[in-house]
Length: 123
Image (cartoon, rainbow, N blue to C red):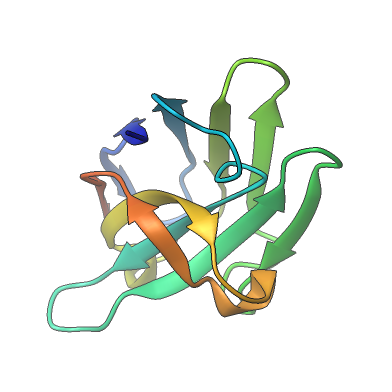
């Protein structure tokens, strides 16, 4: 059974930076080639943030975070990071790590999720 554990969420001020970490464990065969991050703000639907194709480190970003966020992975460690820079209040939300992509990377349609880590950006 695949497990995803996120960490690194915190409260920061506008313009600040944070790095989130996701560690994948358990059975990963056929499910971990693509990993991603999604977020959900209070009262809003979950939205995709970034996806990475692990074997080649190819990345995809939502327009709302492109140029500010960087998704990366640590080879052989089943670990994915999300570096977040120039944070804005609209970046506030619960951030979820995910694996087992269904469809295109830009669809952010994953089947396995972690419990999430909270990011709060205040002015």
